[in-house]
Image 1 (cartoon, helix red, strand yellow):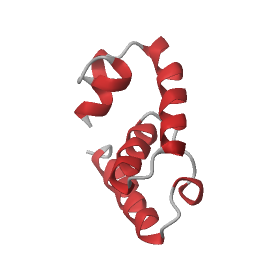
Image 2 (tube, one colour):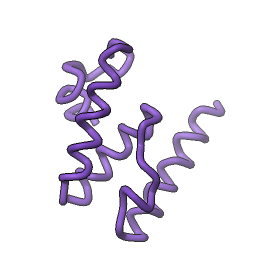
Image 3 (spheres, one colour):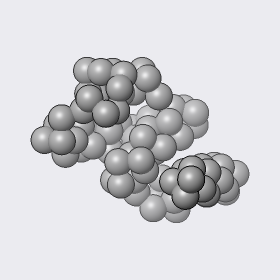
Length: 84
């Protein structure tokens, strides 16, 4: 995740990201997600997009049901972390 933050925002701290930088970065991430073939890298990109409320639907992002299930688990973890 730190690598992705550094690549798209120039920092490893999400809290330091300038709000006006988010739209352009998410556009680049969505393009990269569409081009990425590595399942792990796709999941990482999708996860960051999800945290930025810009992730595509699971059936669009992932062909494999196991990847969609992993994404659902990630969504549940994020939701439960926000409840504390």
